Length: 92
Image 1 (cartoon, rainbow, N blue to C red):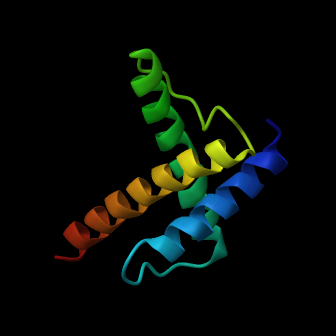
Image 2: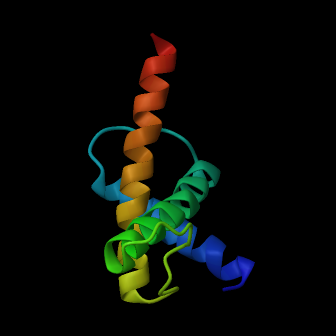
């Protein structure tokens, strides 16, 4: 998948995840895109682990399709949750 497709997938996944996830996350379009791209990798890795039983660091393997976006969004939600935990612990 090209870098443009990764950016588009990350932007879509990050925006959808921020809209779904409750509460205020802050950040602009760049943080949304970064969390979306990280989410695509987290979701793709978890999806591959569940599907094959092996741990491989991959992105949402199905690409810019509906299942690929869903996996990336689920991964972005996990990334937003983890980022919130990290930020909360560092502010204390």
